[in-house]
Image (spheres, one colour):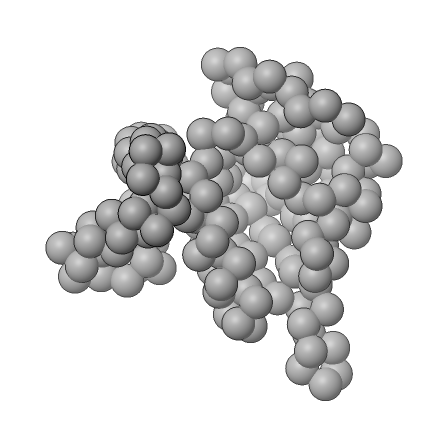
Length: 167
């Protein structure tokens, strides 16, 4: 399946709607709810068994996913703003909460993601930051992007999580 070409058309979902998906440890989708199917534009059969990055928008800086994977593989949850790509090339923003799922022996067996609708103000702020991070990644790499992000957090005297929740 080829990746859709991004177009500048935003989709939205209701303030009271929640997008849910589950993946295995390799990020292959094992469950997705109707709202995820509807907004992404894919059929359930096109999503199940596919890597979750099927909806990754090219405007997303890699450093965000680096942070995400570091946290969840360490057994911790993370919150992040994510711009997703729909099958038709349009996009939608979410505030994602990703948590690891554990078996009875505390071994990570997959990941669970619950996504809600972010505020317009948060999208404005995070869009500007992500554009800068992406620009840095293209010119200097992911480590430079991570350093830039860490410098912002240090200047604000805040953690990543506190920053996300402040938007």
